[in-house]
Image 1 (cartoon, rainbow, N blue to C red):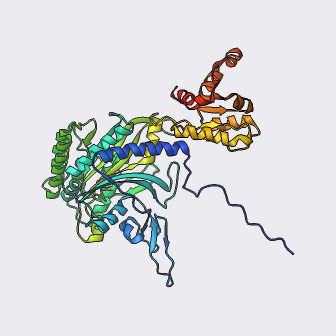
Image 2 (cartoon, rainbow, N blue to C red):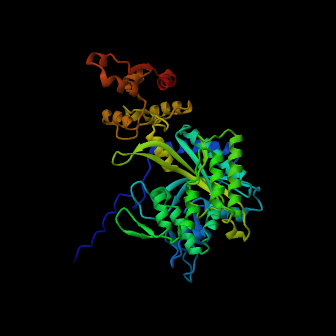
Image 3 (cartoon, one colour):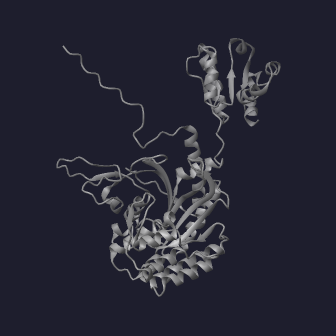
Length: 492
């Protein structure tokens, strides 16, 4: 009789595109999110925690138009007797859930509704270096405020947030543009075909990669890319392309110069004029609050997302230099973006509801803080009470209880106590600042040994044998003074 075939052991690794986060990383992220939440709360925004799962119908236009609605998201169909259950999906971002929540609870929510949300989102995309399928976002949005004062407030709050988490003034810049100005530019080109307008938008989005000359070629007949392949152009005449190029290169020395250049680029377009006036209002409001051009600036080169947003759009860029994988200097780049999206809630209600908001890329911002050495110091581990005699476990647990009651993080070693050296190695791995030692002899005399592991490590780095023997890293104290002496060690 053949032996039954054994099932292969599962691989001890996460799915492709996912990763695990350990203590320090989790603590760093929580500390940063707490700092961000404090700023949002200061501005009057309320926390919202929506479901991680939405119906595909609620996610709507965020999904590609495919036969099976599971491209770009992690989706599944609920089972029922007719195989016609709802399609469900892990949320793709935090904005689509907000639209659903507001539409569902609008009669009970204040108008405008100001909320912030933090949490993981999931995208079923091809992973790559530093690109994962699960990542954190941190959003703040105002729903129901038509005035661009709401946009100005978001930009001011974003500036305060970056400084609160440790990005100083001079290391970041928040840049603002407006989709309405771009609509005015499209009017000035005379292009009315929807497909050709979409081609113009896609070409504009390449401005930061190919520059003015590259965009000029792509708006016209086309150009050769870096690989030598020929890319067909949009087919605009030079005269038609001129308003687009004037728009992209209209950044002036001051906001007033930039706005004047934009007015020239849009010509007689009414919607374009409305967009320029909105930018003027935002600039005036920010200036009144003390947010100068070293923090927030009008910049028409911000073109990402203009196909999605309906009004002002903004992007936070970190301006300090880092080294790429080949050691070349480059700027860190964008860590947050947002804008006005007045059509999102309309999918649910049939009525347009003004909304504006920003999303911070939590992982990118944390990476930037680590590169600049501005994350919080790694917190110490717990005080470890070692076990010299298993029969006296209750005594060791009593010590831990006293330390915890005093607000000191502590634990009893619960591994095999046979090898005492392993207990100290465990304490080192836990980044423990102090180890407590009490054998039968110390117990009879009413004392404990307190070992300052941090001081001991420093002494061991450079001390001679004689100095090491005389070092004060381990000393005997009265059992009654345990809490007080441990606190002194931690304070040092």
